[in-house]
Image 1 (cartoon, one colour):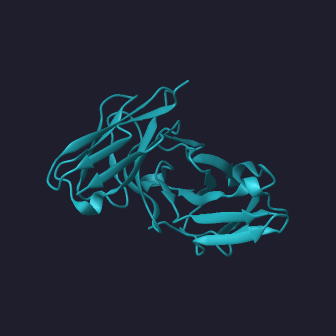
Image 2 (image 1 turned 135 degrees about the vertical axis):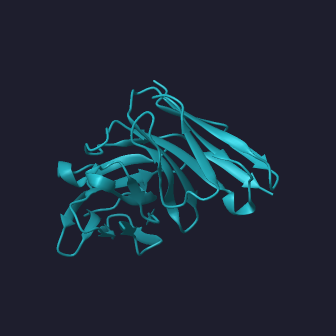
Length: 116
Length: 112
């Protein structure tokens, strides 16, 4: 049972390059999330998707785009990477459907991104 | 806007001592509150949620709506409790609960 799988695990980008972080879950969950984790800042929500076909901005959406490709997959794209986007990125999912209560969120193992 | 505040970045205690990790939230409605834990080299995972009123690994947390707090407590800390602890709040626009917000986290270090 894989749970939430993120790829890649590590990435180094040059300023201005673009890339897409992939996330897939096999738990048939409705909601999916992207967070970034920075020292002293905790986890900050970038974007979330309450159900297939919907996405909403979180706390720090600038510089990112997302796609909820289907129920299983939720990707995060950096169009023009900046050093300020150096962080550890986490994808998560929960079974909560729009309007229902969040029970538990399951997390991926993280992607460590460095922008030089 | 909702916000979760964890005032302590690091809490250092000796084994057997009581532990209290503080969490305060700002939200005008009725939130769902959680504690998540991240052990070294492991994924972030749910520790407990207020709606369940449960005790997990000896930890408890009580929601105090008057003080808008959800502090995590354990009477006797163990070395294996050393980890990063995050308080989280779920509340979304238009009545949904899908937006899950985390605090900055508190690192708990339990010394022998």
